[in-house]
Every structure is written in C-alpha cells, then in structure tokens.
Length: 414
Image 1 (cartoon, rainbow, N blue to C red):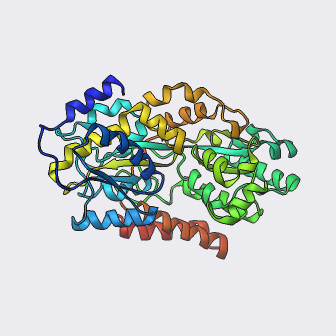
Image 2 (tube, rainbow, N blue to C red):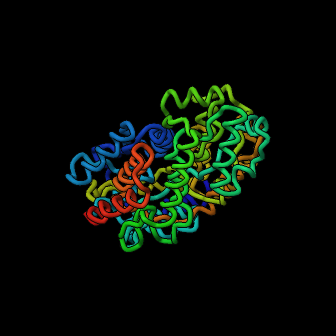
C-alpha cells in the first residue's frame, strides 16, 4: 500500500474507541460486490475486532432499496455503492454525508482522480458526497474484418457522426451486417457532444430542461436516418438476440465503455476474439459509460462513520486495489496513479493485440464534467419515449422535443 495512502487513512482516523456491536455494512450491486468483498478480506485481517459484511442486490433492486433507506432512515448501510447514472438523484437530496467536511476532508484528494469523475460527485452546494471508484471511458468498438470486407477504414467511421452513418450504409450493403444494435445508443452519444461545462445532459446549470437544443435535434435526425435505412438491428444491449448477433458478426460496431471488451471476451462473444478493435468515438466525442461511487449515508450509525470513510479510501485511493479490480472485473480505475501502471501498456488479445487501455486512458482524461440532475433517469425515459414516437409513428422531431421539454419543465424541480 502506498505511503501516501497510508498517511491519508491515518489522517482521517477517529480516536480509538470500542468496536461497534453491529457489523460495518457495505451495500452494493453485482461485480461491485465482488470488489468490496475482496477489499474486506484484507480489511478483516488488519481489523479483526471489526465485523464487516457486504449486502448485495441486483442493480435496480439495490438502487431502489437505497432510495427507500435514505428517505426513511431505516436499515441504512455504512457505505453505499452507487452507479453514476443514479448519482444525481442521491447527490441532490440530503441523504448523503458531506465528504468535503473537515471530518472527512475529501477535497484534498481532488487531484488524485480523473477530473470529471471527482467533480461529478459534487452537489449543488459544492460539496463532494461520494468518492469515485471506477469509470467507463467511452469508445467505438468495431469489427476490423467487416470494415476490410466493405473497403472501409477506421477514419470512415470516426470522421463525423454523418460519416459514421454513411459508413454504416456501405457496411450493410457489402457485408449484410448492421451498423449498430439500436439507434438509442447513437442518440445517447450525440446528445452528450458539446454540453457546456457545468451543465447536465438534460438540464442546464439553472435546472432548466435543455432537450430542444441543436444536439438533440441532430441526434434525433441521425437516429431517424439510421432507422429509415435499416442500419440498426433493433436489439437491446444484454438481451440474447443482441449477444447472438455479436457472436455471428451481424453487428459491425458497438459504442460502450472500455469494460465491454472484457464482457465480450469472457461471455458475450469470446469466439470473435481478434476481430474487434476500438477507436475514439466520432468527432472526438468523449463521454463515460457508467461508473461506481461510494458514499456514506448522513443518518447512518455515527460510531462507524470514520470506519466507513477509511474503507472508502481503501476502495478508491489504493492503486493496487484499483488495479486488482481492473484486472478481475474490468473496473477501469478513476485513480490517476493506477492509470500509470505498466498494465496499461500491455496489448489486449481480444482486440487483436491493440494497446486499447492507452486509448481509454486518454479518453478518460478528456471527458468533460456533466452535472447529474435528480430527474436524470426520468428525463432519459421521456426523451426515449419521444424518440420512439418519431421512429414508430412519424411524429415531427421538433414537436417531439418540445413535448419532452414541456414535461421536463413541469418535473424539473420536484
């Protein structure tokens, strides 16, 4: 363990006191629970007097349970793992501890992390309410063999979003492969491009919806073009038909976080090893696909808050722990020191020996700070519903976005 990390933990420790009777509890969801359990193995050896446990639920069940626990102050864990898309909902309430407070001093670690990851956890009052563990730097996965068969190069996919769609038409005509699984994936990325600093994907810095902005119009227009040309397979990520298409070479590209390489290599499409490559997203778009944060409930047992804080530091500030999680769970580290390890310079066999971790590292350091709003998940549902209205029922794009804007304006500050 690095000396700096030991000093950080030591500096945050509370005065010695009797160990609490109840165990130190971490609430997590799949894969993150494995990371937490691995860390707790070493923790228990160093702190035999402290019982610790991980309570794991499925992804949606976990976040629903944590919402209920924070609102009722009942059955609160000592540490909560949160997926980044839920962070806005939790950060803008009063349920999480202010980690910028002197008792914790999270601000001193600001320069230890990729900037966007740390700043995403800052609430409206400017306080850090969670610490970043892993991130998902976005990239474009593509089948190199299919591109070659279609007479295309990587640059034909990445020059612009319009070029990406044009290349998709050539891929479909010459190989029969679809460009993408579902147009929502394309829409989701295009709307993130060019978000002004300090604003959110769906709401601006003054909490007003921004879904009639040109980026949304462009995203809807591109999605409409893809659907009209039959370039999306109309399959959703993680469903069996999506996995089957990846295995059979029926999907030419996939936009996702760097962790997707491990998912495809280990269980989705291991038979396609060596055929995939990754590139930065078109138009040098940089964004994150998911990520994990660790927080302390404000009304959790005060006797265990410093222990919880020490554990969070071990989960997020220990380079070796971060690298272990990256190797075993494809959890790309938010910690800058961990990103300097030689592991990042090694070729990735599934990607034909490409040194893809260097590309993801570069992307991670360029991702802008996007503020999360408490209505982020709701806004996502509203925009997706209006996109369906455009694609399935021919609703005019301008009207669809105006209707989404009106509904979100009504819900923005509820």
